Length: 356
Ligand SMILES: *Cc1c(COP(=O)(O)O)cnc(C)c1O
Image 1 (cartoon, rainbow, N blue to C red):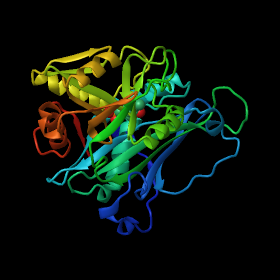
Image 2 (image 1 turned 180 degrees about the vertical axis):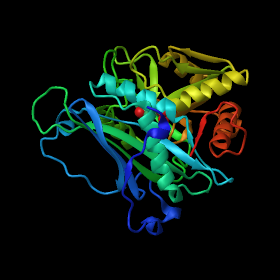
Image 3 (image 1 turned 90 degrees about the vertical axis):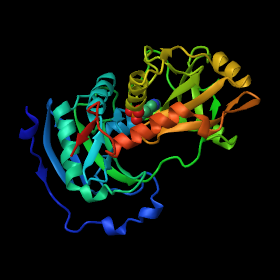
């Protein structure tokens, strides 16, 4: 199926709600644009692909997703450059990951060309919602969930795929404080940590809340078996800087979400001649380096914040203060580069921008 042949039924809103948006006080994920995409899966095929006004959807009380958790999602962003054009950052990678998540959760995959074209047409229709202002973007949330009206555990036969979009401003305003978690677990080998499965986030809330009560923003997750190896930070991947090198947990295990942001950071660093090590990263190595002032940088990598530099790391009774943000030359440079790329201020030498 060629992309140009994909045309969806479109029902437009009578009047846009955009004038109701308070752009100076946008809370993340609370406002939604005028339209949404949806299609249904039944009898082994996708049907009724359409763009309709954003509105609540009816739900059967036995809908299988809410009982047994067959539910996955993606997150990506559209950015408007000073040239007026809108670019989406590497959506092909989200399309592939969405299919991997679907496979792991025993759900039907959404063909990549439909995934991309649905995003393109939806963002194009709601293009006024992608404003040209520093830090602003349109967050795009594709999601897929089981809709069988049946209380019984089995792979569902019916599903709904939807895409909603939400205008957002800058995500984190201050450097973050994180705590190394040695009891609770995000993902175990053989589990679903590599999938963007809804349940992974539900299960992370309680441990994160404990950390928040202790004054941290987020957790650094460690491996489920020994809690000796670092995996991710909250809902972001994590990267450290030691001795001028970037060091990050390898994705060989199926407990780490394969982030588009982290992959892009690694690819850029390598092009710049910065050494990158993807390997096991032990808590001991990081704690020892931090204690002796040799941990040069640590940051979370994810679509929401791009790079969220870590100010403090809590470990048992200790709190390590990391070097001042201004001294983090590598992450600052990558962050500036990625932002400039997303807002089309520099040449897209990697071909990462998908222009609408
Ligand atoms: C989405 C996500 C990330 C970041 O992935 P990006 O593709 O860079 O946005 C990292 N870890 C977890 C657990 C995630 O859900």
